[in-house]
Image 1: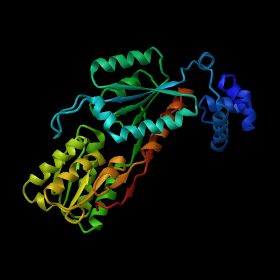
Image 2 (image 1 turned 90 degrees about the vertical axis):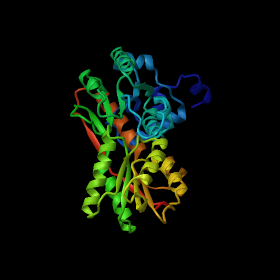
Image 3 (image 1 turned 135 degrees about the vertical axis):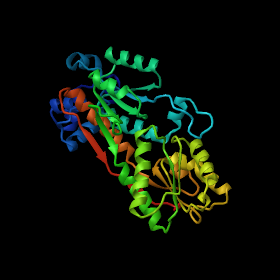
Image 4 (image 1 turned 60 degrees about the horizontal axis):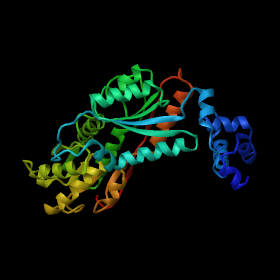
Length: 356
């Protein structure tokens, strides 16, 4: 296949099939995101697509499939109060500064890229933007939605389900909702963190929790308390943050000032790496050495864990893999609208570094 032919956009399905050594129908199924293609065969076809620089004819494809070849990644957040972080940064600023979000984008893009599907990013944080989103979806600009909804009071998951929009949610829905979702086993992850601290000889454990108006924040705090009870330990203190670095610093200051005896905390579970990144300097300035005086464990295994000093022991949730599965489930819904709703639960792992 010449570069001239590839560059001119004249590469056909037959050309890709010839390079891959498969039928045109197989190439077509891969290009259209079919889930019935054997994974090994799919990789062969994807390599042939890359080698030939094949670009799908979207206009023709839309006429046949009645789809746009595009999905939306929607990040939805209800207005939130100030959780110990001083002034609250703008919504977009919080999203783009959070490593978790970048990993979601990477995982979704990695899955859809070779399937000829494009992604648009939409941020929703009030009634006006929510109504604009629903209108955009009703007009058929995209075929479905990967939804990141951070607060229990958010109505968008229910609204999308009622609108019969193909949608997959990041995390278990806060309210009973007929919606597909992908989740990490939050309780197993927190159990790993607490068990690790106890195994390190720590008996006075506290936590910087996530916001209690989010399902993840609530579940991680409940799991922390349950695991302490299983070890016969009493909770020293729990201070709420909002998953931002600034709130982690403010929560650590509050924790150290709490009475009675919070200064004697020898183990700290922080419900996100980004909050731990804010908390660690506060501990140092208070004369608390990590891990000698206080062992610290985070949650996520994001880039923030390696930015910590010392590098952070943390619970890894496989975000990229989870995001890829969200995209997979969404494309399945789009291809088969009457299919049964599905959920996927991923298992966390503990990554031990120098903070514990």
